[in-house]
Each structure stands twice: as C-alpha cells, then as structure tokens.
Length: 134
Image (cartoon, rainbow, N blue to C red; front, side, top):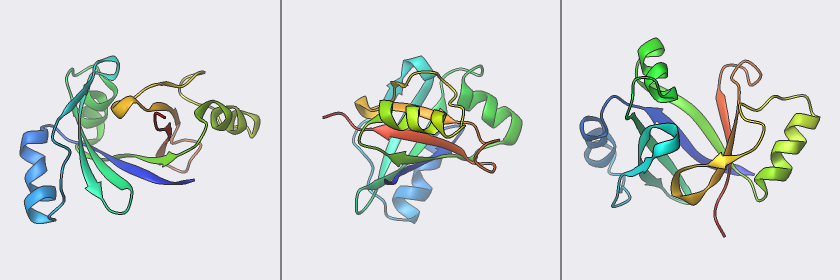
C-alpha cells in the first residue's frame, strides 16, 4: 500500500491552482475531470514519484465537498491509499471492524474504483482506498 493522493477541497480550481502550479511548480493533468456521481470537479497535480494532489471543486452545494467547505472551509479533505484489489481491501477493513461510507466500492476519478472510511474511525482523517484501472 502506498499514498496515492491527497484530496484538497477548494471553492474554485481556477483560483486555487496557481499556488500549486506557479508557487510550488507542480505539473497538472491537462484536463479537469468531472465526477458527476459525486458532484465534483477534479484537477490532478503530479507529485513524483507516483503520487498526486487532487483539487476538488463542488459542482453543487449539496455534494460531499460542498458540505465540507460549508462546514469547515477549504482545506485538506482526505488521504487516499492505492490498493491492488479494492473489493478485498474493503472486505478486510470491514472484518477488522471499520465501517466504509459505502457497502461496495464506487467509480471515482480517473477510472479508479474507490471506497472511503469515516474520519471518526481513522482519528479525524477521511481515508480513501483506491484501485487504479488495469
């Protein structure tokens, strides 16, 4: 398992990206991706070797990211860990007594399959597990 990405909730990708691209010198993916099921826009910023930052902009105030920003303001939203088999990893976490947000993994950004575990069980940090497409 390795750190896949850090998710950062922002009000506007257009306004936030300058800090990461110009300030920190990070390269971004060419396209902003819409994950319609989660009502979010995602911009990936590459962190060599093999990790990235995701800037997450809500497309609706009732989305998870919109609610997060309303309650806490912009900032770090979650940590994501790459796994080889999301179904097996979810089952193992459930067997260990940890409750996922969804009973089954969902489709996420970049064609990944993902599941989240509540911050109440992970000491205040929303935790995502992600399996990249083959």
